[in-house]
Length: 174
Length: 249
Length: 78
Image (tube, rainbow over all chains, first blue to last red; front, top):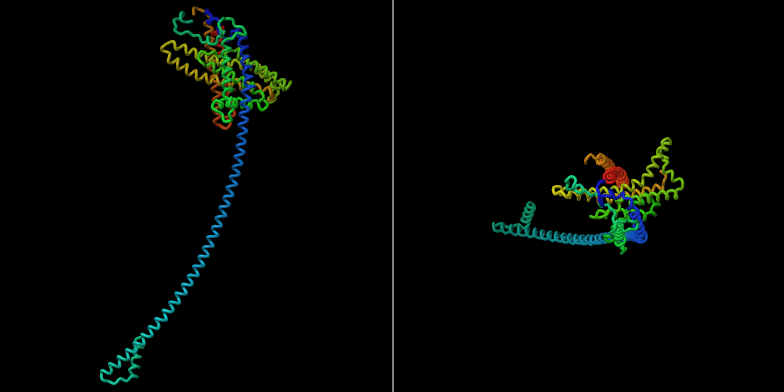
């Protein structure tokens, strides 16, 4: 390539063409200074402010959220307490009502038992009476029948002996 | 060039893209002549304005998409400066931001087809690197006085090898601007030259698919390299600044 | 190419300096690989060391770029 002639090849390696160095360095310095002023005057303060503002609002929001969380916890505690209170109250009422009902029930049962036993005694007595009267009638009928049978056989019925005989028989049967 | 000589179809001009030309005709290049350097550096300024000024003009607390990019760039460099140099380095943040944005956009704009890459020129990167070097050295002496020299006296090493280490440290200190500038210019030059060489292969029909594939792959790599070199240039500046502010090992 | 020894030496020198780029590639791979190995051992510490990784890669790569520069100088400037 070194032997070539022509505008492009004459340069060889353009990076080592020292005649262009002042030009490049001049424009580089201009560019760097311009970028530096743009950054330090406009861009960086602006972005820094935005980031700081965001950081601030995030911190505030987190603090507020913390506060709300605390409040929510308090409210939850109060709610739980109220719930527990209500529950114990309800249990108390239920127990009271139960006791009342039980007392009423006991009383009614006792009353009913008494009535039933009274009625049962009455019935027992009447059954006894009925049985008694029935037994009397049977004796009467047996005596009459015996007298009639004896009379029809032609014998003279002695009332006293007939009664004794019937009574003895009845005593055997019962 | 080789067309007539050896019958090759290829015509390699990989370095032509780096030629500095006057913008409005003529051949003379004085220090004030507006050249393609001027044009592409002006575009760099424009991109910086677009990225950081235009997007943030609403100053929204809830950022739009473009404002988020501006804030991300700001936060990225701010965090880098803070992490590497410490709290007292934060006041040099605007300078470092300037360097980063200039290098980043110069690199990216160089990837536009037919573009001129300003950062591929050793004149540009050496100016930046020596500016950083002198600024950091002067700052070191102003901030620490003579104790800035303890940077070269490694007090954690055994006493016998300290003079040797001091010589090595001094050499490496003065090589810094050289490697700092050549790294950036070399990376940019290399990438663009390789892309150009691949593109030249497209002149042969049989090779053209391969050439297009190569150009595409290299282009993707160059996008990555452009960013990483801007990042490396910036973070090395931060490291040098840290040495100036805290010279004691 | 007609017996031009200087021209030939230039091309040979440029080719030789290309070895430097390959070696620098090995160096960069070494840095990145060791970083990855360390990062997998202790992933929580990896995030804070990416800056160090890039600085290491940059230093390793710079030497490869120097040899590339030598090649370019031989090809185009000498």
